Image 1 (cartoon, rainbow, N blue to C red):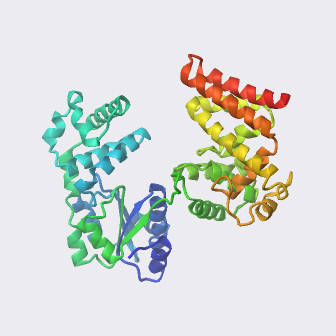
Image 2 (cartoon, rainbow, N blue to C red):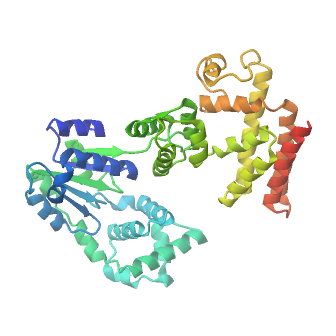
Length: 445
């Protein structure tokens, strides 16, 4: 039976909750759920004796079992939290685990990547002797295990191996921590004072142990809802952002919310960090506005294109060139930038054509977003993008161009594309020439 955090919390408050729970999925949501459960079960002043926390990757099951069998010092529940529980891995999951190892390493989470690599080797049946014999000259075995190719990925694997060796990782000790007796604990039942929380980075739902937890209704999966493009879905973002603003006692202007949606990327933790920065910035003010988001909220999606095209629409070459310099300094490739600019200009061209033909009577210069929804988007369905507000912004920017200017811009983009792919010209100079041509050409026109 599928559960959600609200239902689990309600059961605990009513005294009907199960004595154990497996929580997995998005790391940020898992950590927040664990904190919510801890707040419900063990008051702050009792946590010194009624709460124990273990890292499942380095703690033998015997230690966890002793904690479960030891009554709490204070009356009430005792919570035993096993993080990074390795009890739900299987060999069929090795490629998924391998991808996670490399992702953790690329994010700078070296210790987590190293421990997960050792877990993968244990699942594969490696012995301590095999591990000790592995060196830089035989890393091809790791390449094969992690299913990687390419010089950069191989260099990262060699660096990871060197790090693991420097940490003195011991497969035998880690294997002991995975030798659990969870099935026995489920059969015999936990003491009445216990609540066992297991949080896991990787879970194979085909394992017997997972299926047993699922049958009991003791599983809570907290995944990310994404759209077809891989970004966080609008409904998920709406709930996540609103929940944090309500918790802080702040309100959010409609256009500021839409700007956050445009700038949100694919990672929830990065979004959380930007929201925290935003709340610190506004201080005691009760409402978050568009300018607050524009100043503070880092663009993790492709919201930068709106800042750049706004500068192009205003024929502001200085601002547009500044945007270009910032993006290139962040490591964005000129061809990627050109492709995104081309896509945006095509949308503006489509919007301008609608404004001069089918929507000539509906679109009015300077109309508000609410008027746009009622007049132009009569059915509420976006015409050019997946987002009604993005459509509104697109129409606004297109209003600053003529059809001739947009056609001319597309020709300049095509010429820049040819230069980037065929000439020896510095890519940054090609992009700067394009932006100057678009701005100055539009002003001349």
